[in-house]
Image 1 (spheres, rainbow, N blue to C red):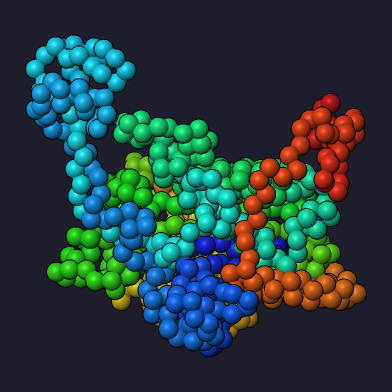
Image 2: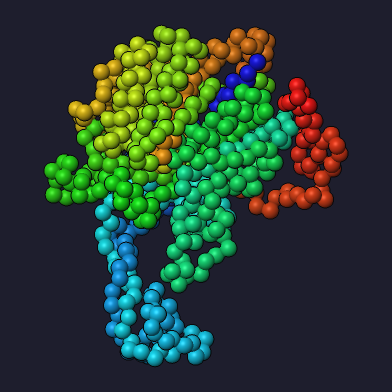
Length: 636
């Protein structure tokens, strides 16, 4: 009997705000919410961005005056809305009007000037081979030829791409814990993973005490590593700029580091770990590892995540050079404008519409998966379930970045599984697709064809398609996490977010069997049984995952567990919900802090009790069994 991988917690941070308790989702449909929900989400944003603080349970505005949450929100509403989602790149990321692009030039100077520049390392100097340069003293050089040479000098210019999905203005995750010069990506990881773990309402040590240490796993990564100055970005350029390379830039740059940080500084995980890489499908690749582990019975608890912080001038320039991004000049031409306003930048990403490229975004998203039996035992809140993740490559390709045929397999298999599990009517009438939806002219045609042909094959006449990148931008490997987080909110508030930045859908897309809307679609909290997450990544990395609604999961589990067991579960669930709610309320007041356990319970080999049947670890309730099954009994 396979265990169903259920989602018992989720959290993170992206351009819409904090993911747990659906706050980021609520920002997407803010005008559809009741007054209390709006107030809570905007208050949360005010606390995150430093526009408000609390003292003795009272909110303080920027002038230090005590006020109610309602008054605070009334004053800051427009500012908070404008400081979220896609917008013009802010100086906290980099100055778009003053980006350094080095260029070659000829330097004419006297010998003394040149020696001074060499000694001070004012710029990278490329010395011709026929020159004789002798260092006569530390930092001093003797030059025997005319002081004329070719050098590389900095040339500052205006960035051609000036829009991105950025975390809420002013949010600084590194100030919430001892970040010790961590790359931005890892600072986001600490916040996001903590948010997911705390959202469960069950302290993780209580979860860990119910299972063996090796029944826990962490799968998290990103698609391109940490490329800011504290990671690989600084490692690759500091030497050329005459700056000192640090001991942290190399190790903290690795793409699997989000999992490593969770293991070392949050969970003390000694179970399985890993970080799969699959370009834009990376989050779903890690989700696949977790789902397979739980279904097989190898693991009971898996934390799955992704974290990408690609809003840097170097990464943006790289994607721009590929022709993948929406440049300002193209946005101007698209709308026949003479200049771009804040609202134009907000609408830079237009999935399935007349568009000119995708918009970069940053995000960190985590979910806690659990086997259904452990969830029932612990009284965990169940937000949904992921029965399978399908992954297929594209086959032979002419261009490594071009789309191929693999996505037809992953999406069709997802639809087939939903039909087998929930029935044909459920697939046709109560499912929708969370599209990759990048906002490139190529993607709008190719992905719409994939979804439309799948709909035709399964007899779906009007398949609803959402695309949350229109709000958040493309967070690279974490994009699937953004899709999942936004989808979970549908089952709480009953709205599928519309593709609101697309005024009209392009005439070249395939939509005979699709329902594309630039308005929010009201479906009710139980009107959707499943969502199919879809990712199409560079290099031919395709992944699709069906996610089942909580009301469907409840119906399924009622067939597996007795009424007595389910009643006991409901009694425990009431306690879990109260503790989870308390975490949310603490966060709304700025009273919760990320989990970060530096130099905590560090073990060495001498601390262990090792026998030929098990290993005991001090601080862990249960030992690790060494009794391994022989999978090849028929031949050995």
